[in-house]
Image (cartoon, rainbow, N blue to C red):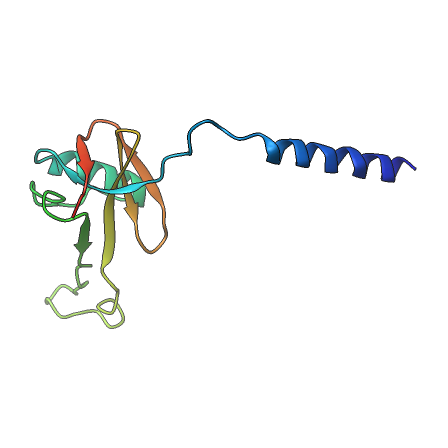
Length: 126
């Protein structure tokens, strides 16, 4: 009896919850471009996202394209020779996104996303 009752209550709650609709649809993340060069802030955001040391990016990154590719540096030994197995890493790809006037950077492979509250960007209409 108790099991049937709790199932009925759960079903009723789910039906009520599904019938409530917001007035405006939730905006989606959209591809974005920077409004001015902000390479330093982008580098800091990517470092937070990847939990790594800051990487170097061009100051005009994300000015013309919403996508950025970071080639992984080949690891070398003390003589400058590539270390076996270290040069086959795929490059990391990142995209700049915007939602509700807040910019984000997303790592395309992991889908990890980091907000960039100090970065100014706009929707990429291209």
